[in-house]
Length: 361
Image (cartoon, rainbow, N blue to C red):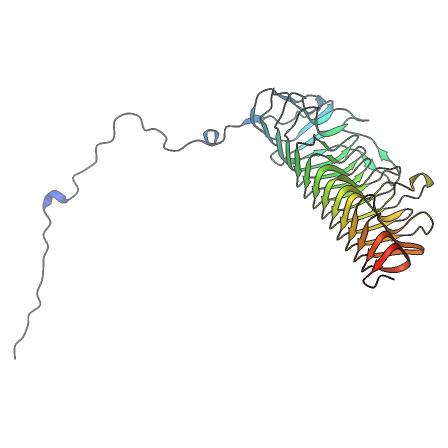
């Protein structure tokens, strides 16, 4: 029998392919291969406040560019930050910090935008005064305004800012500006005024809670006992608002909203509606203690619910046109008043209409 001896294969590498010592470094001083953070996003720091607050302004932005806070700012009087850059183009990142005023009765704005400064973006921070609401009135301290843009400056963007405890308005920018994801609370003036307002809240407000041309996904409450609304605008959708005197929500087109009014003065008969619309109300709910739950002055109401406690001066739902697939409630009064009542019902009260159809009582 044959035997096989193991075979060994030896691979020999030429000596020339082995390591030959250190490599020759490139000539000159090594240069950085990456950009710095400042090169990636050039920004200007705004210094933090002093230990003892002084009269504002703490800082004035005179040129376009990107700015950010490096700490909290507190002023004793006047504006905290002025934005005066001609034609605008300023981006201000509050960087999670707070701008505060200690004034005893109300002075200045946290951020004031000059009338010649357009297209300012402000985001990510807090504005704080010392104004409080005691259940019947506001006790006034701190800033007279939060973010205030002088007319006719325009095109501003305000995002993710909280504002509280102010003598005057919370966020006031013109109707070509946008506000989103902001919260304003306990201010004696108007809460939020802008063109488009989305995903925001204005609670415990002395004036109008939120006003704008388009308002969506917002909450608001007005403590005003005269005639001011919780929300006032053009097209309003998916919002909830209340007022102590005026309408909960007033606008042209209202959809998917809930509005309530607690007005009880005889001078508020034509003001304290739950919902007041000039064009249409749909998929909504309105309630009033003194007037109509839902009042549509020149249009139609559909798939909605109107409630009123007043059986002589108000009612559930009013429209001079069509009310369809809706429900009204008014004990001893008018549940629904319309020209055409289509597929409607009354929990309490009567349905008054020239034409009734689809089972309307």
